[in-house]
Length: 293
Length: 179
Image (cartoon, each protein chain N blue to C red):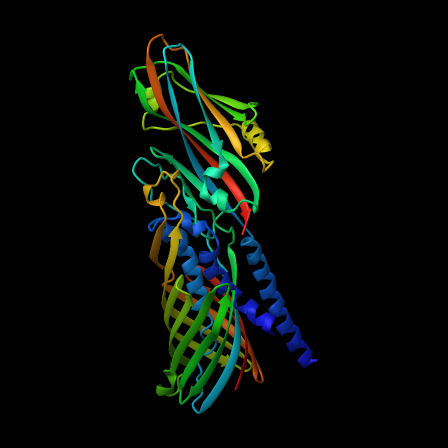
């Protein structure tokens, strides 16, 4: 069980520890880190802001659910490269790989010699998973996502999420479907190296047909990650900003702003299995297994 | 039966998550980086053919130095020439670069087009390396104890009289190493 617990959070740990453990970020100045890391922040945001609901029905008396949500995030081709920012005299006709792009790096020739940028990890399908617990009462549901502090080497990871959902349809008599609004806040912190804040607001609706329910929603969201790392000064670099050791603190915003969600759920007594697709800056396929009453 | 189906589903879910995370883990096993190196060459004299030599030490890069022992592969990928200063400015001569092993064995030799070094003042020229030339260099570098290359710049077809040329050679190596 402990192993499974670790694997579930592996995605978050991998992404955040990669900042601390490998050298790829130490070849990026404060401009290029944004182009390089934006697709990564988008993926983290798309994953963390997924799986917030599989029904708009909220218990009027008391309800409880514990769920495990699994996601597969697909990164589109146009987020595998970015146009680097280089000093005058350097040609940027050729794009550089982003964090998800090709493994080999890229080098640009100009008056001061070559400027080398790091390669990516060559992945376009990113798994993500997280558990969540929700309690509902009088048409309002409070959802909690939480992991206690995890040690990763000398560093610590914390993750916390809170969502509040309220039934709107309870105020509209004879409405043939359920409608609810929801707000979700998530924070992930990896020591003082990475700190990410994710916000999401959605309106969603669902309709039950026996043991099957269909649901859909529109979500506005944002993801911002503060990245702190050190440039490893290289006197051979053509970029003067990369020649000396320097601490960088960059705020990177994800491209995830809006998404459309459509899916279905199968209710088998106290067990609910759901699957949906999220269409946004990146596409997310979500499945969930919930125990609820 | 119904309980079995539920167990199979849960087991399948975890297998899926484990499998994909396994693929992702592999992606973090190694890192490939391009490392730039710069070398200065100074040529001067009265003769009609002049040359200067520099020794490329892979150790001269912190990324290389910090990861020695974890390197799986290092390869030469790019090579460029730049004129920093030439005197007289209208000096004419044919420039060639020769890359040698540390024992002096020639790996390949390339000519810079045009016979005016001033063409490349602040305007570096990237040499187009053939697959065979890259392969020859990389065969030598595939022995990770070979950490040195010798670069010789030769200018020929010069007229007699005093002249000088300051040049920079830019090289990029691609290094693959374990994290």
